[in-house]
Image (cartoon, protein in one colour):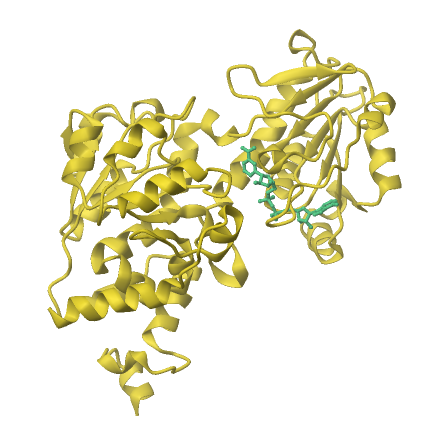
Length: 432
Ligand SMILES: NC(=O)c1ccc[n+]([C@@H]2O[C@H](COP(=O)([O-])OP(=O)(O)OC[C@H]3O[C@@H](n4cnc5c(N)ncnc54)[C@H](O)[C@@H]3O)[C@@H](O)[C@H]2O)c1
């Protein structure tokens, strides 16, 4: 009976039953697909006045961070639903979005970050707040951004003591435990790894003077990609597109089967054994480190002694540097000074590669975060989390408690299950 009512769009309070097509599951299913579940969202708002929220974004302060949390299109999406959007003057400038564009799409421009934080219920950012932004955190503020709290106890303390509700892009989960808000940055870093690698292979940049695609009558450059996940696949696409010879190594046989199916004869796939890695390194002009073991430090697959068997002037782009790097001689660099030489091998180890292409990165990121941002704005964070388990996984800190198990374990904090805390809040709210 309940099921047939739901099929005809009648949403009632019975959704709290554990039906396999309960509204929570239904909405979660839609969100995992990455599309905006507008019809579903509006049906939830049928029986009550939709929430009206004030949403804002500020200029990023992290070194060489040129992305911005909201695009003009995002602004329009929020405004169309009755929310107000505030943008700090110049926030989108480095991603080539002008204040006028934001205004035309319905935003209100405020002169400083102080004004934006003070005016908004939810701040949508890109990177975690830096120390000078901690002063803006306050109870009930929703902070929606990348947080990477595990290595940042100072920020965790600031969030806990402020009472802010902090939602981290990187822990929001999609279908099959995918991380939908992390994926676009991996796609970008993968493509960039070949673009940057090709540049540093040029002699004036310290490389061995190889054009990856070659020319008729001249051998093409050899690209070796270790790790065939998201970054590795996008690196392979870019390298194949440039006309390079590509070898891709992974330890997951199912992944290798998949890659063999989609790339066919345009790449060589190899199981990532010590022997295959050493043989491939010896022949490589450009090596891309794209390995990840979720939650763990990256395994050191390229050791110092390997550099001796590599060609002088070859380039290693260690994308996995943000997790420690897969090359023993890697150390994190910045866009200011991205490369260094060890034993004649050029190392490129920028921990924030997508920051170099802020326009593309901003739009790609905004495409994935917008559906979640709209859910939060339309329903409030607690209700949105109740209806979407994937979003609930994104909440790291909630009103003075750490509600993400992995983050709590990494930082040695007490873990409080988010559903308990949020259901309690909701019961209070409905009682009022
Ligand atoms: N530097 C940057 O700016 C930047 C940007 C985005 C992502 N990243 C990083 O790039 C890394 C890869 O991310 P991803 O999204 O591609 O991860 P992913 O999980 O999609 O892929 C990782 C792949 O590594 C493979 N792997 C694990 N152990 C291996 C081994 N011993 N040999 C070969 N392959 C192995 C896995 O099977 C998997 O296919 C991560 O550390 C991520 O944080 C860095």
